[in-house]
Image (cartoon, rainbow, N blue to C red; front, top):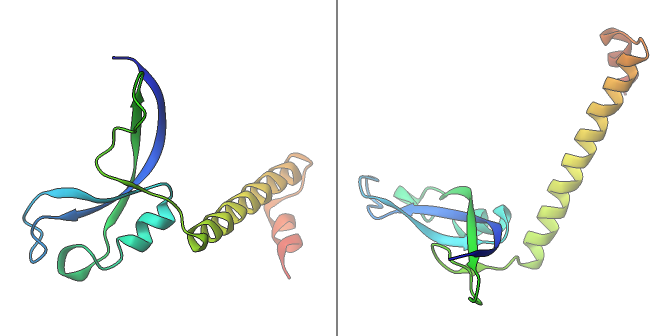
Length: 120
């Protein structure tokens, strides 16, 4: 079998024993984004806790038209898309800030100088 494509999916895991969690874990939802998995898994695990969400790999084999996954891939809702874009923008901003601080230090600014410049 040849793998045609792979992609990351996000799985909300629950347990067969929702009272004590002594059963085995299984995928409750397989989603395109962690935001969707988090939303769908809210309150659906042991004693009403939120499901653990992990990134997993979905595989498409050559000659197949479906993904081999441990469940159905739930698409992002409009709200999930908005939440993902906010998260990605925050990550980009954080990375840009770190890069700017490193450039400032490379130019000879001390940690104290950088902290003074960052004060509002």
